[in-house]
Amino acid sequence: MRKAGVLVLFLAISAPPAAAAAPCPQSCTQNMLIGVCTTAATRDTSTSEPCDFYGYQETHASFDLVTGQVSTSAYTCYGPARNAFAHVTARDRFRVVGPSGGPPVSFEARLSANGQAGGFGTVIAQIGEVGGEYRTVHDNGQGGFIAVLVLPLSHAVGEEFELVYEVGASAEVTAMAQGTLGFVMPAGYGVTSCQGFAGQGAVSTRRASWGALKQHYR
Image 1: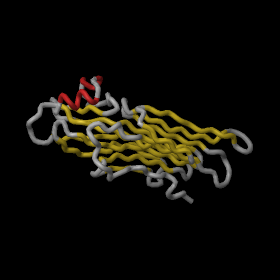
Image 2: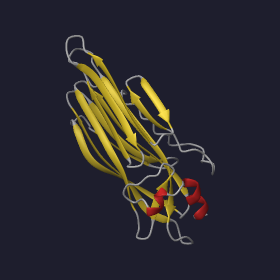
Image 3: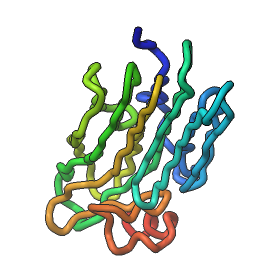
Image 4: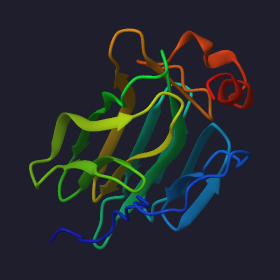
């Protein structure tokens, strides 16, 4: 029987707007019952414990907000009532960069995701805008997925917006899920982020400080 509710989604769809000098939003990892949230741009964590007879039960959860990558995996010991799970919730605050003075820019945030699960395991991936829409995919009992989650966005140049993207894996044998964030922008436009996002759609000014960029595009 599938264990419903093991994968806990941390997507915060509603949150107060960030102040101009606010720190970067927190991102979280969950390894079994061990959850940690931090404003760091990267985190890589794992758990491992021996099985009763042989082998190990293991989980892994990591995020890198500079590359826009999130990853989880879980492995269980063979036996009754065994389950291991891991989840990553990545958050970052972005800003549209480009020629100012025009209408809001229409663009896309994309999460390229894949997941696999053996036995009765489950995998999931999700992306959303805080205060806006979200897109999600899960294995639907088929053992896995390969998908590109497309989130339409519209923001004026210089306007801040916050995204949450996440993956989760719950295993009764083995499971893994991972994703990579990217943007499809009109010619002449790009994004920069509080955490220094440098993936698809980032502008060359990403190495400048977040405060300096906000001042420049005001």
